[in-house]
Image 1 (cartoon, rainbow, N blue to C red):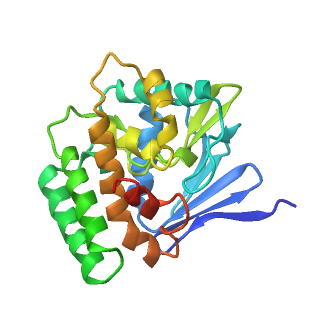
Image 2: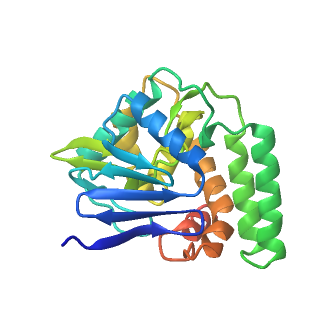
Length: 250
């Protein structure tokens, strides 16, 4: 009998693995709608949808392995990281999806959210003021005009699978939509800065990839994530995780 493995679980959603099947349980069916739609439109390998019975979505497991996880050692050769970059570029070059995604929030909305979060981090003593202030300065570079692309919106390194040097699939599309391409590149390399050059090599240098903007997104994403992670039972202070990312900008 297959064991049930909890992949991730918090108050908003949970993902379980039973054999070669992943069961995603989400109270917000709009997120599942976005995920199913995005997987049907994305020009890159995605998991096969087996069935859907709200609030559960069943998808098939992908072959291969990930290139690492935030806070853990990275695996894979430079060629595999470059293959990931090429797959991300293929997604970004695809026709735009019908709705904005998490990577497509407006500068006005994002600035307000970031300023509120920075104030809360300092007021509640979660992070030192100098650490927050420095990373808020770095994050400013992300607030600039950008051309919309088909973005994943939560492209953590653990969401992309490779096998034999090829990308076999990308999972977790609930934040997908029109957005800033550099947000995806920053999310994928968060905590794995040493592989950024490999990813960019695969992505291609025929487009403008501003490294200062990628670093800005590292700071911005980490600042916005710290309190949420603590409140949902995760540890952003673990080695190599969000707080270390913020400290690396000092």
